[in-house]
Length: 34
Image 1: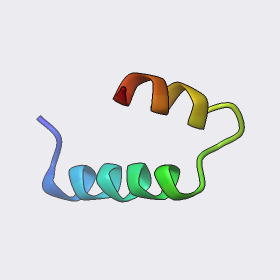
Image 2: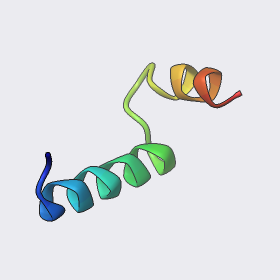
Image 3: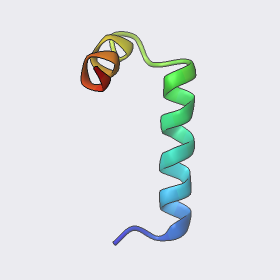
């Protein structure tokens, strides 16, 4: 199991990726959400 700090860090990185995703990543994320 991940520690609470690791989980919070992952969530923060995911939120940052949604706002400013790496090149070529935004397309894949939107496909998975739909």
